[in-house]
Image 1: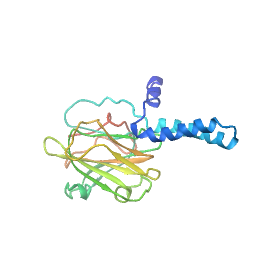
Image 2: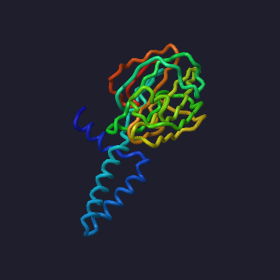
Image 3: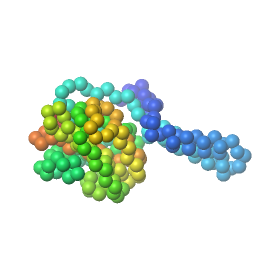
Image 4: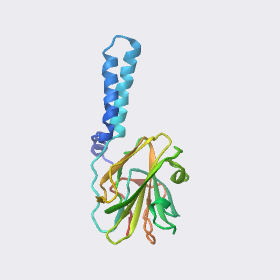
Amino acid sequence: MSLIKSLKLVLAPPHRAATPFLGIGLLAGVFGRATPWRLTRALGTAGFAFTGFCLYFFRNPRRTSPQGEGLVLASADGRVTGVSMVPPPAALEMGSEPVWRVSTFLSVLDVHVNRMPVSGTVTKIAYHAGKFLNASLDKASEHNERNELRVTLRDGRQVAVVQIAGLVARRILCDVKEGEQVQAGELFGLIRFGSRTDIYLPPGITPDVLEGQTMIGGETVIAKL
């Protein structure tokens, strides 16, 4: 990655979910540094540091999604931690036949906005309260807090994308509703702070990525339908 691209990634404007955190950090920073007491000045320094972290964590860089019919795109930045055949989430009513699942782990340093893997209609959303295990563990798909979405394509096939909270994450944001039309690469949510996304492909479709591969949300092609 070039220096210019690296700077654009780091300095990208934040997602709107950062607003309350930035406000708290700036308020603590300004108030703390404006006082003469050592303790509150230390609080001010911490407030500015927290603000800088939030600007970095919530960054929302512009992405250019590849054009073409039948492309399934990565829904998040991160590292592929699993490519396996498993049944789709039961709550999404996609049957019990095992399909390929691609799991991407997002470290706290990765871009955390989530993007739609395919174009279609959101036909089912299922939220599950749960634990906050390390999101890189396979059992996180069943035990962690998560939000599952089923997207139906124009030809009737279905793709599922699941937002999974992690060890540090405590909040899943999803900005789409059932019945909404979505486009591949479109921003649809965010998980804070450290998490995972799973994509379930239609039966008979094989992923084109391998475990350990680095994903770029909205740009990396993980399969072709």
